[in-house]
Image (cartoon, rainbow, N blue to C red):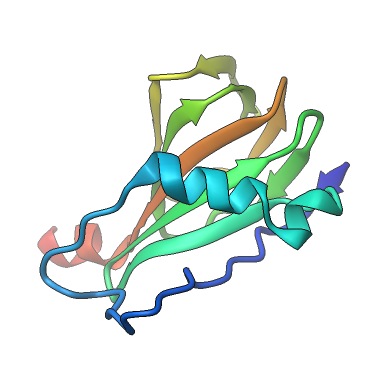
Length: 137
């Protein structure tokens, strides 16, 4: 299965909490379990949930089925991938690495990459706005 972009939907919240509140706490095992019991997941689609959304940073919990491929164009944002469950292969034009549960990968801005899941995989994706770095220089 090949996916060009991540479709991200906000978390379901009964308490109408703000995605950019000053203090947020998440029960990741429960969120992951709920994601894996969703209709979209049962249809074989990826499932993504925005945990934090602010002008300079997004944190997204993402669950992918085995064999999922994502080709991404990265703009002025730096990203990190923290693997919660599973394993994925991460490729740029120059390098290829496999990252496993418990590992963290960082990628600077303006780099194209491709992800391929080796098994069912859940990760935290953090996107930091590249304009922060530019403003400090």
